[in-house]
Image 1 (cartoon, one colour):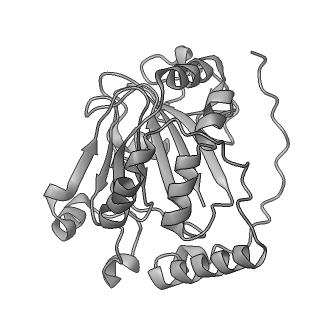
Image 2 (image 1 turned 180 degrees about the vertical axis):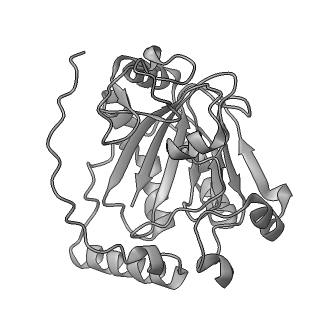
Image 3 (image 1 turned 90 degrees about the horizontal axis):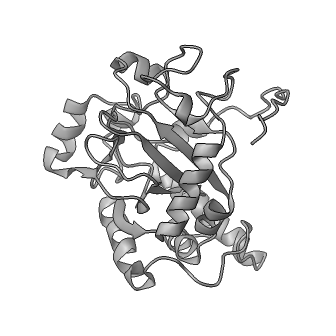
Length: 285
């Protein structure tokens, strides 16, 4: 595969990130969802992301169960993509160049990583596949079940889907190096410009020793004001004291296993110690 060509970056023309404040309040997210729904109904809009496919690769009989879990707990697990799709995504990720972040000048493949470092010696906590799109990723992204769940949970047809395919290599990096490298090993919740729903798939499989995702059931509900007015990253003791240690769920599964999550849930990733993790992340909004 040819080495990707770096394009000159345009100046950052994004407006002020007002949503970093307003997005902490559920009334704001409900208002935005209602406005999107109203606009789509007036425009007789079905969906502006690539039209969904006709048949799902997932168990459609579980749709109501997954929606109930999302609304009650803020997440639900149990999606399973076909083995062939997981294999195709894995092969694509192995053959495609990665980088540590968007400004990284060093490109590498995952096979080049040794002891958590690139050939040039840079520490790697997260390695993003530079071109995540492939036929298998597109097939999952456009799955009608995922889009229908997103529509019913968000209250409007999702208009965008962001794709991310990334590795978490095995290493003995200290915690600060992991944080600096973009690995979210601390409990936090995500603040998005508008309501969003994440779909995660373990392409390699993941458990406690290979980078499993941890989420806190019920933490997607409106948060106490002191938490809302402070950092989205919170000490683990404070999160578990507020929501209960019994509600911290380690989500484990084999290749192709998936789950859905409201980004308002407190969550984190465990550091891989025995095997690398490859994750496909889709954000419907």
